[in-house]
Image (cartoon, rainbow, N blue to C red; front, side):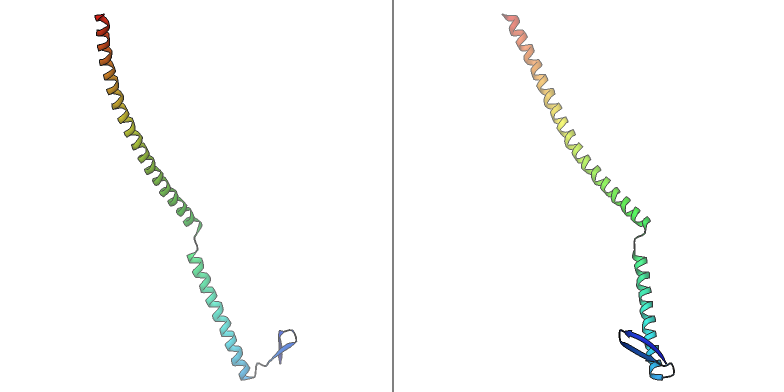
Length: 114
């Protein structure tokens, strides 16, 4: 018979001719095989669900694209507000210059009278 140590001080006697031991050994073997298959399937699923380097680069580029579009939109909004300010200010300054020129003409005429 074959002795298989399980832990310190304990031995398991295995006889390949004992039917009870053979069925237990077969059950243990099947359990180990099934665990190995399950582990292999889980590892294969993890490998399929894992992100590849190319996928990671694509994700990063898509993130950069979205960030760029958001920044462009923000810049367009900011520029539109600045352009509106410039247009409003230009109209006000032209009106002020026009009024000042008219006042200058009136004052020149008043000076010539005296």
